[in-house]
Every structure is written in C-alpha cells, then in structure tokens.
Image (cartoon, one colour):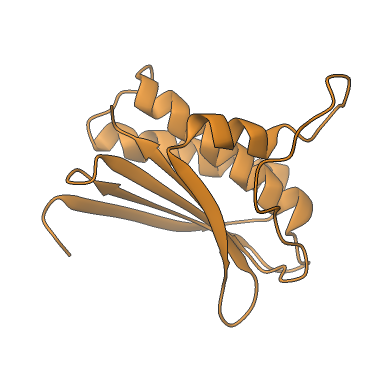
Length: 139
C-alpha cells in the first residue's frame, strides 16, 4: 500500500443502529485523517456513509448477515473512497440516481450521493452480495 493511502474497515449489524454506528465510525476515522467533524469533507463523508448504510439496511439486509463499511483515503487522487457491502445479490441499485417525487417520503438517498460524491457506482461482491461505492473529494 502506498504511503499516501490509509484505510479503515469494519462490519456492522444490518439494523438502523448499525447504520448510525457506521456513520459515527466514519466521522471518527476521517477526523484521525485530519478532517475534523465540522469540516466539509467530514460532513460529506457522514452524509454519504449514512445514506449507503441506510440503503444496505433497508434494501440489502439478509437475516443474520452484517454489512461492511470500508474507507480509503487517497491523498494523491484527492479522494476518500467509501464502500458499503451487503449480502443481497438480487436487489441492485439503479445505474443512475433516480429522480424523486417532491412529495415522496423516501427515494432521495442515491440522489444525495449523486450530488455529494465525485463519482459512485456498484459492483457484485463475491461470493454473494453487492458493494456500493462513492468517492468524496478532499477539496
């Protein structure tokens, strides 16, 4: 691993509490990497992790299986890469952020990720599941 890259990885229960804990862990990690909780970078990472973790709990939950969060700081590329992996292979995110109805009670998560992240997408996870990723700019 290059000296200008740092990583963090953890597993969380596929519950709303697990999603909250993932967001808090991400904020602590990003603070250790030099971005205090009130910084734009930390706030953006917190929002993106919160949305991806909530989606993993709501749409990717498989009873008895956790979801995984990984973060990678790449100072050369100027990004923090966020990955949230769950065990549900059948429920895949859309290829692009969905448009949302203004009166809708949900459906804004990936729209927020699309606006906040430099780039995002998903990939199948072996042996089972999927990983949704997003890259947040350091600038």
